[in-house]
Image 1 (cartoon, rainbow, N blue to C red):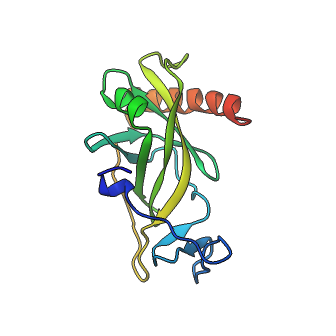
Image 2 (spheres, helix red, strand yellow):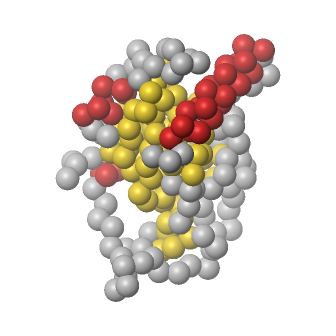
Length: 178
């Protein structure tokens, strides 16, 4: 068990091994009382997320993560960061998204490097998170109207976004059956 409080929560299930029901569609409440989503919500390509890795802990901003399934997230991570080394030795991660459209959740699970060097973006590795738990951070009566972002209007930034999303979609197609 980790000493990091992000990863030390005990998950308890009801007597049938499932989640308790909730008034919000797609949200379950574990017996600990914490709201959880049954699947990842959709988010726009321009989303900025925060990857939290153990072994520190460390928080790393991630540009344009891709939702590839109900419980899988794929993103690009630069090689020159120490994050790749930490993921090899501590693959348990938390992945936070706060954004427009009342997006407010943390996906927790195990990360794996599916391509050490992306073919279309050689300075980056492709990382896949197999999500185990999705913490729902939305608050009743309040909505998130924006989150962290970049100015996507410059041609180099638009080009980078297109390249990364295209590269991630190619990779996602190859790992769909993993």
